[in-house]
Every structure is written in C-alpha cells, then in structure tokens.
Image 1 (tube, one colour):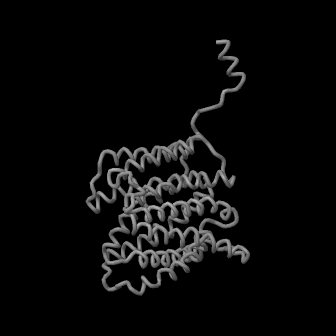
Image 2 (image 1 turned 135 degrees about the vertical axis):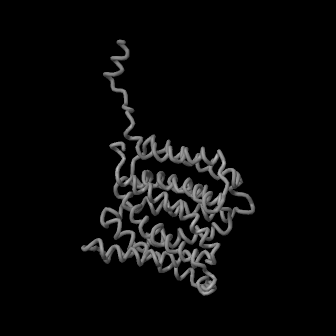
Image 3 (image 1 turned 60 degrees about the horizontal axis):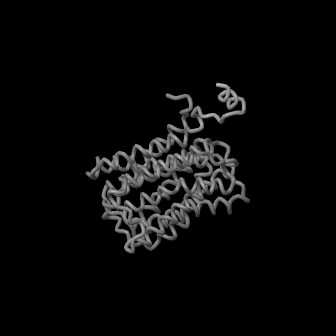
Length: 313
C-alpha cells in the first residue's frame, strides 16, 4: 500500500461502494412497493435515529451551541431537505442516465465554490482529475441516455437535477467551516435531524397515500440498508473526509459510485455492460487518483539554478 494512501481514503472508497450499490438497492426497493418520497423520508428518519444512537454511544462529550442552531438548520435544509427534494422530483421527470451524469457535476461545483469562497486553493491536478472523471461518467452513461441532456421531454427534470448538484456542492464546500467546531458525527447528526423534520413535512401527503401493506421484505431490507449504511454511517465518514483532506478531494470520491452502480446493476438487475461503460469506469477511477494524490507526483518547478545548469549543459 502506498505511503500516501491513508485510512480516510480507504473509508471513502467504502462509501463509494455503498453509495454505488445503494443505487441498485433503491431501485429494487421502489420496485418492491415503496413510493419515492415515503421511502426517502422514512430512511432519513431511520438514519437520524441511528446517528443519535452512535453519537450517544461513541462520544461522551457533546457540543451543541444554541447560537449555531440556525446555521445548522440551514445546512440541514440545504444538504438534506432541499437536495433530497430536488433529487427525487428531478429523477421522476428525467431519465436515470441523465440524473447520474448531471449529478456527477457535484465535484465541479465543490471545486469552483471552494475556490471562489477561498476555502481551498486551486491546483492543476484537482482540475485534471475533475475533467478526467467527468469524461468517464459521460462514457459510462452515454450509451444509455445519449447526449440529449436538455431535450424538451426531460428539460424540467434535468434543470432540477442540475440544481440538486449545485445545492450539494454548496453544502459540501460550506461543511468544512462547521467541521472545525464540531466532530463529523456531531455535524452529521445535528444537520440530518434538523433536515429530516421539514423533509417529513414535505412528504406528508405521499406518506398518507403510501400502501404500507404492499411493501415486500425486499423493500424493507432496502430501506434498512439505505438508511443505516448509505446515510447514517456513510455521511459520518464523508464529513470526516471533509475534515481530514478537504472538500474538493473528498468530493472526487463521489465520482466512484456510478462505476459500482454499473457493476451491481449488472449482477442484480441484469443490466448490460458495454465497452464504453468499462472505459468510463476506468477514467473515473483514474480521475479520483489524480485529484487525490496529484500533489505526491514528483513534479517540481524549475528554479533559476536548474535553468542555468541546463543552459551550461
């Protein structure tokens, strides 16, 4: 294992695997009787409860300053309520391929927002990794949806998904400030709880309409996996990554789930895998590696002394 490959990277890869598999799990759950909004709101309620259990068991000293509650509520509304609403509604109005491609812009939003707000500095390897990964995602899904992202049929859904990506990019970039005063587990628990409350209110009509008796064991199992692992546990790891290696580099791992979603979809849903999709998956992984570890490449700027030595040679 390379010396620069840290535990945080391995855990973020775990997050990418879980989020990739989660895409297939959600699809199976919706096929097993769940409506979209009830599934989303109940899994977030479950995730918030699990987060509180983890917080009470793992962390003895907990901080929640009253003056921070409005800000934490705003972050919860941004990263949980608003994002999830835009994501669900946009997905209903566009294709799965368009959704996956357009959400791949999240790392790009994180990068330019972080640089604009002077949260992080710009580096060549970050932008190289972003371009490489985004190109890979285009290859992965182009054969399924083509490049008609803003066709008249799916225009509204595409716009909603673009807005969802922008919201999540802003949430990820702004999270670093809060993680300097709260642990990743605290931040995840507080924002998730505060964001779940309005999410439940928005989902109330759909919760009433949901036929709970029609949900199979596959649906409930998918809800459990998605709520506990994909949200409660993975959000904590994700926030820890933001704290340890920064928002831009952490967000690059968000480009890996489509590759794992492709694999899990082929295994459990019988979806076909094409050569362009395989090539795209390799580009995605390469982009993540370049953005994360580009600073370790032996590329040093030429000094005046080195230029003189070259001239004498």
